[in-house]
Image 1 (cartoon, rainbow, N blue to C red):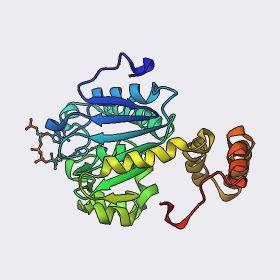
Image 2 (spheres, rainbow, N blue to C red; image 1 turned 180 degrees about the vertical axis):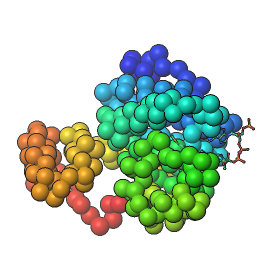
Image 3 (cartoon, helix red, strand yellow; image 1 turned 135 degrees about the vertical axis):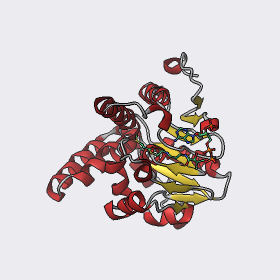
Length: 266
Ligand code: 1HE
């Protein structure tokens, strides 16, 4: 374990640093990886303190489910102001995932529901194993999303589909989820981690500034007007292209020493 996380310990989250890849595992299978305050605090600590040697992170869950969402036992006695602070705490944590140091790949299986889907949505790439299903049971529980789902999930699947999931309890299975945009990949059961490690190796091999631009600039440009977005794009593109890593990679390609963008690269 690297020094910045050397003292990290949690019953709810394990962290393994495998060279340039950090593997995070939700370790609360008895409660279906339901997300309580301590798990939010642990995730926050880990994402803020990822060592500089890490270039990509993978997040997955122990047991039969990725996550059953918000730990419902923690919120029954909350008043409005406590609930507001609770939600803002999730927002702060998930902000450090989406706009943190490195791209994050979520490996999904079983239930990805409520706050579990909000957590997955804060990641950059989602790989769904065949058993994955997605639900937003907040409507049935008398709740509303509070972990940034209303901002992130419509950006993946649209407001109408999210409203349908919340109003009617509609679920999507792994294939349906990929078709509507909840995941980018579907793989056979048990093959999610292998796929994630393969993708993480590719991500870790990119120039850091390119990954930074994808994580930090791309979603912000999508939120801007076309005119402002294109200006931001030009700025980000100029900064990336002027970096030595870009110059080295362009010269390597021109010298015939870099991989081609072939049809079967995916
Ligand atoms: C929990 C939770 C939880 C399980 N909070 N304890 N999320 C939900 O509404 C989903 C609630 N969970 C379920 O519907 C089911 O547990 C599952 C379909 C995910 C899995 O079913 P199953 O049969 O494998 O497990 P189980 O028997 O229901 O649960 C095992 C234990 O985990 C049991 O505790 P035990 O002490 O009786 O063994 C459950 O009580 C416990 N458990 N899920 C607390 N979520 C920031 S806002 C986000 C808002 C939301 O996320 S709302 C959606 C909440």
